[in-house]
Image (tube, rainbow, N blue to C red; front, side):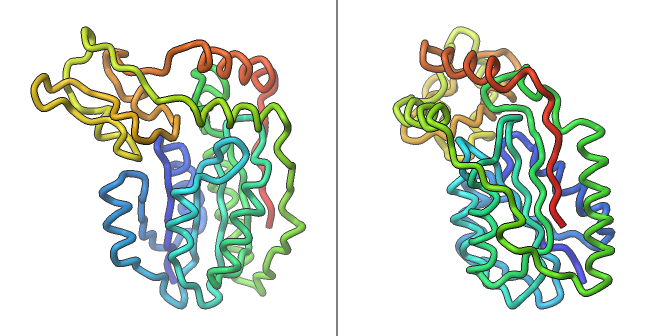
Length: 270
């Protein structure tokens, strides 16, 4: 028996939770990180299917109350034969809305048997103060404890979860308006005077939106796609890449004012 972990984690928060939970499960771990375009393309070209005795971990980030569509696309290529599945969602201190049941439905449709669900907090994509530094040590300790509880469950009858055990909170008008604003925004700006051409932002982009100019070597926004995960801004060593404009400023202020006053806990369902 081993762990088959498939995750999408632009800023590595979900990856850290997956690894902590796997540590608690105390089984050999095989990781498939499908965050970056090349890795995702390779994975989808010849999807490695879980073995009959694997424990499957599926993790994806929540954007606007829904699980990231790129993660769902990859998860949907798996073919289960009743293997136990652990479902993980990472969200930025607001709510995971429909994402938990969305992930549950997909796991069941692809042939898996959900035995655990965890909604964990990660630093919000738009803000360095909203859930700053999370998952922190206590979050990771809880994820490891979750893994240990799952191991105990697997040693017994491992009763599957029911769909209604996973909380569901329809997106509010405010969050729907956030989504509408984001759909019309082109992605990050690049300050050519600051940019050193190191290529870190290009390498970090999960959709290949950023490229290096062949003449100058500096980063460019192709404006073809953007998840607004801010992985590019987080890795830039000279703060040359970030999201600007009144719409982004409104989103950041709105998120921090509405969801930044309370440190939310993680939710575990077994």
